[in-house]
Image (cartoon, rainbow, N blue to C red):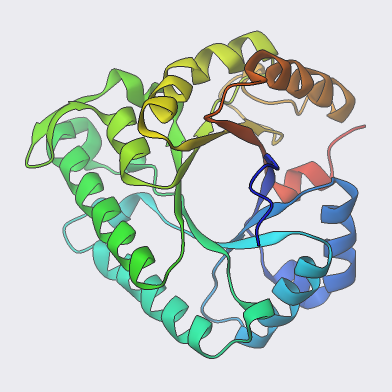
Length: 268
């Protein structure tokens, strides 16, 4: 029985070879941050048994592991083939694993706006993205797994009018999936909370949950995007303020920190 009342405290783990090389060290770090969910990149070159061991050991610590994958070119004409490959791998993996070794869900990070066609034909790219997520939701349902996605905070400014109807992309994505992690990449509670406001409202309207994601990595896009400069103590204070801001809001479901690699080397 899942503890439904607990908010997500999550992170992204992009390099699964970390726990091939040092499983206990990786788990010790995750446990030290009091996490209960980790989005772990699927590398199909990696032995499945490494995932099985890691998931089972994480489960002992009360940490659920979600299968993470995605790339901007998944919205290209034949990009869905890569997503299908992930789903096929997951199907085989789940079938060959004991219950304690199974993934608890699927977490997609596609970011269609980084695909070349976004600038030249946004409407078609949005439609392709919607088709991809619809397909993913069907695949996840067939595997009896929840489906989550990462989403830019400005998707509430993107509208669509196509076979999926007429509306705002942010609301469509929230309605079409089980949970959304909004990439509210700023370094102050006020801005983070403001960027998530519309999405939290959409999630409430559709009875879905929304997690707020923040950045710890060094970025060339501007110091205000990340907590890299300020350090972890400052980040934790800001995240606490965000949680206070949304305390009692049913659709708000916690915080995600991007990502294990940069968090590990972050200044205190």
